[in-house]
Image (cartoon, rainbow, N blue to C red; front, side, top):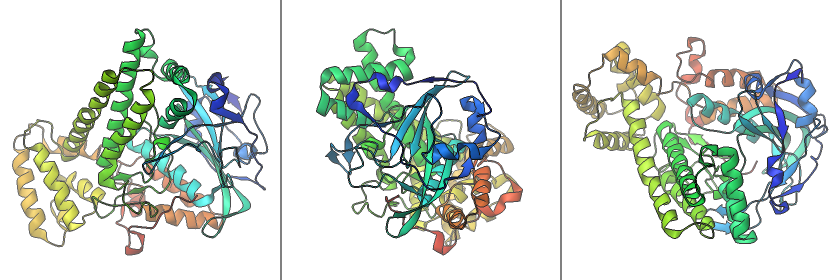
Length: 484
């Protein structure tokens, strides 16, 4: 580390001992730096001149002075069933830092080896899944959606058995907090009301400080309302960009409303409302169109964990905030995507019919809205070319342009604003797969170039047009599993 402008804390260790176990990382063989996020390092309060110096930390052979690794204990509902055996089975919280802007960051080493919570796992992460998490967390950041971040990743030679033999990798993931809904479920089901309250006050003091001075009952009520609303708004943002999480278990739900734990995710290509991106999700529990309902179900799991310390009526009122927050955010997101500023009672119907059209004709979701953002400059052809049945889109365009007569902004101003919310570049699964194949051959430059593109998804970036192309047939609906 060339210099630093942060201070180190270990506030998570102030919680009862049952919330963690101290564990040293299990070293990887010849870990090498694969990708380092220098811009993020600056936000955290340091800069690096030699990336290779950090490979030992990613590989589990070194710790910086002050690091005190722990595996977190939590539980949660997986595919609707409560699992008491959960916890950090392959990750370690290294330390917490406070950056120059006052923001708190957890540093979490993912792929660090076995812990008491590994169950029958090997505690490792493989190269492909580590790359996918790095790419997607930075893609979401570029899209302006709350997310954990990727600080750096290393690759190693260790063979890891999944469906086949793969190679190991590790990721240092950072976030404002790694506390999830599942921490509260663990406290409620296994530790008791006082521990729930201890955890609740811990989270408020670190991440909701504007509530600290309120009386206890109001403080807890306002906190729960905010958690519910943040969760609802996050999922409305996912829906607006066509993001499918794939594993919305309650232990993957951040208590501050970040997108958390990237596994078998996908961004929609040809629009399919019922798209299932996780091939182990046989019942489609976490399909794209079910994500809003699952978000609410997870808030209910959290609510049940809070019942020992909060009033039933307060909990019910808090849960009622979900639908209002989700509906408001989603409709506003879609108005923005359609370039509508003046509110009209027919807008929800227009949005619903637009989704129905895209679903029926399996139209590329991102390309549709980006083409709509350039109607003034590029005309109707790019949009019409996305449909086999041109009459369908022509009828829709006539309705849309009739709606635009109620708007007061100039066309060029409206479409400029639309291009700021309708990305040209998203992390399509086939793009991720291509850079994974290159990385498996030892070349991480394609990954770094893709990250550079995803940092500015709304910009035209003429030099990188290839990344905006529609996926080839082999690249659609790729089969992604949980195993990583």
